[in-house]
Image 1 (tube, rainbow, N blue to C red):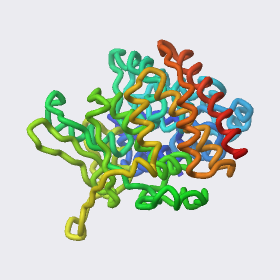
Image 2: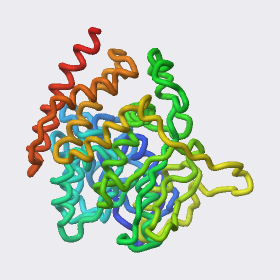
Image 3: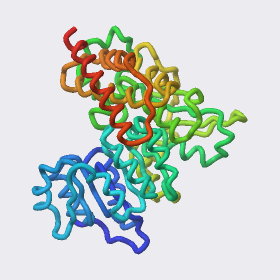
Length: 394
């Protein structure tokens, strides 16, 4: 079924990673906004059937596929006249499809090209791919200075901070406070987690997400990456960012100002709220995603994270203080370790162990170009695989 007719002032949207969790929820927002948005381009890594189905509903001019081997199959499935782009650089090329906003919902480091190309084109970037900003920070920040370029964070925590900062002058910020649900293992000690299964790690108590980010949430690496992302997005400094565990997941983050006032963004957990905020910015959508029934809220609890059990969070702070290529190494090592855990090759506690040992081999390097970032990522992954092989054999 085709989407609603587009209004004359519809905002043009391109979505890289349209078949994943964030991408499909973004299309739900577009569908429910009834003509407020026009989808001009969609892209995915390899999910040909779903991408073709989306193309028939939303009628983008361009679809992109990272896997060139399936390009001919996609061409047969999309509506007549739809341009198909495939292979290396196809997803990044969506930045040139005429969108007002490009949503980068690609999973992991693979989203770097979309982030950089969108900013270099002077287009607004709705960023749901924290890894590209973290690993390629110097390159991304340079691209961010392009006239017209802008980053709006889709992560619920950073979107919350973005909203809170509209309440005061950024120069008056005392600190940023990121909230964490605590994941499925909150309150458990490291000795209790030696034998947890992949299924247990994927049973997040609050959010429905893809497997990689869900495992990251179970180790609190996701929160560590969010600390690094917040540092890059808002320039507040790593030691003025705090993490608190908030199991209700109602307070999505807070900003404490220098006069002691704290501004928070609260809602039921629903990723459509930050997605809609970024797609519609600076206006807000009329559909109330995550609206609260305040009479039903019994308590809002906060506690310090356990950095001994959830060592990944501490490692992320260390990488942020080191700067340069250290966050790229952290991210690469974590992606290798999480993939091994999901494949049954590594126990849950060994994720942090692999990341920590990989970082002992870290050597600082300047990141001036995308090739520098790719080299740092590749070097870190090579080391992480050697560390992984030793850990898996233990």
